[in-house]
Image 1 (cartoon, helix red, strand yellow):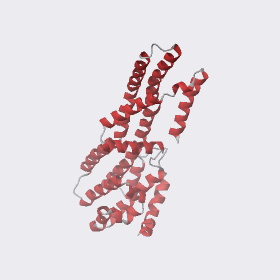
Image 2 (cartoon, rainbow, N blue to C red):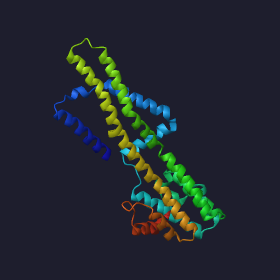
Image 3 (spheres, rainbow, N blue to C red):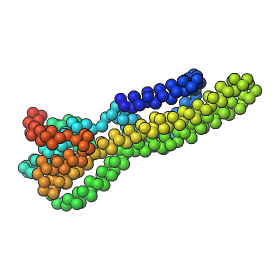
Image 4 (cartoon, rainbow, N blue to C red):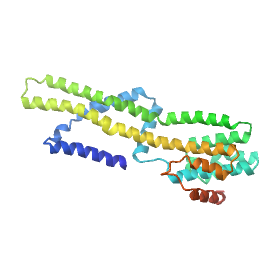
Length: 291
């Protein structure tokens, strides 16, 4: 919603100001200039990226426009899963806990939190480190180093769409100049025409420069920043898991370990400690209902 509102405000200000100055909006409508700029930008984007990154960029754009980032409810679900698993690790045998991490799709704990289970990468992250805890021979600092390395990889993969769009945004002003130069070449071929027609051709050429700069700084760059913010918040969920499990490995009770994870959530989005306690107390009931 914010993206749409901002785009309307930006376009309205530019086009409205141009019209207020006495400009004719029809002059700006030069579809072939936009085809040259947009097509060349998309082509270079395809050249520079793998198909996986291209598809992920499409998904990231949708996530950013629709504001699909973790909400307090999502954080509560992750904390609820962690609390339930840590209780199992403290109270149950190795075989009883392993069934949850070996096959999470059939685990009563994960089934109780379908949003967490639907995030396959996050579920794998949780299960992998719970499995290492079950083994019992790994040292906390070794697990922390391993988590940091994986978080670096996850963050790098998540931000590839942002980096791809940043490269495109940096190229767009130059591609606008390319479109403008082609327009000028066309105008030079019409020097024998009337001044009115020649002026129209030169004006159409300059639209390319305008379009390249506006699309770069007015659309693609802000969209890339929005994607970066959204994806960084998605990575934050992994940090919650990391801090909670490390605290648990260092001897903290599940309630205290979950608090370590809760404190990594930005204050504006952080669920209250009462909300977390209620989630933990209702966890067994939800698990029983799911079973």
